[in-house]
Amino acid sequence: MILRTASLVGCLLMAVTPLAAQEQQRWYERLRFDGDFRVRYESFRQEEAEDRGRLRIRLRAGFTLPITSTLTTGFRLASAEPGSVTSHNVNLSGGLTPKNLFIDRAWLSWTPSDRFTITGGKFGNPLERAPGLMRSELIFDDEVAPEGFHEQLTLVAGDSGVLRYLALLGEQWTLQEFSDRADSWMLGGQAVMSLAPSERSRITLAAGYYGFLRGNSMAQARNGNSALLITNTVVLEDGSVLEGGQPLSPPAGNPFLRFASDFRLISGSAGISLDRAVGSSPIQLYGDVVYNDGAEDQNLGWWAGLSLGT
Image (cartoon, rainbow, N blue to C red):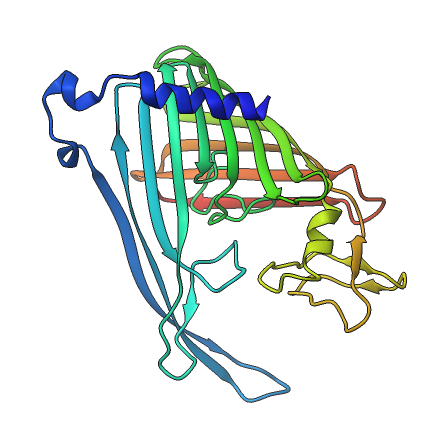
């Protein structure tokens, strides 16, 4: 099914009429650039070592280009440390050496109607997360860019009534490709609903499931690829356990065998927003919960917050 989807998108590229021919507009006039740059100094006070300080930079720059009325592509470069999937920050260190710049996003979206979109490539996280001043990162970090396919079917999208929005999302993210065995994927989906009980209030509800197929292959791949970042607890070949919570490396002569648990994540989130709650500022209350059906213990997590302002 995945291969057929990829072939369909490729055929569409050859079949559509360029938007420039339809609107007599130069391609570079349709480019939408975006990006940001940040310099940050961080200071750490440490009880068992000297205080630490580090200077970091983050650079992100890319574009979005409508090819036709139904096809859109995008591309973005970003700084990052090798192996990092959750941060674009780079430490200014290493004796004035050049810093790394990677392909952070490269995607193509087909929207045959205002109700359906399919995206392929490496794209920004499309999943709805508990809204607020800082969105929930309980399951997926804000800077994670999935690779694979994403579909969205919008069932309701309106400006009046209590039910303002209802959508179904499908996700097929490729995690690791192997030449001699089955690949590792994340297959899942999400349902999102937005309600407007009054003109000043909004309620957002979401529920999802994310199953990681052959996830242990990623743990085993770390044995020969030091660029992979593994922070989950793993079981070594001799049966001993290496606790996670920090980047892990396989001990000499004792490689990673598997993760300590499978990953079958069931999630739910809710957010309530009230406009002009304090003067002209809105107030937002939000929560996120996840249950890992693939783990026997320590399988429940939650995130909650309260924010004032935009």
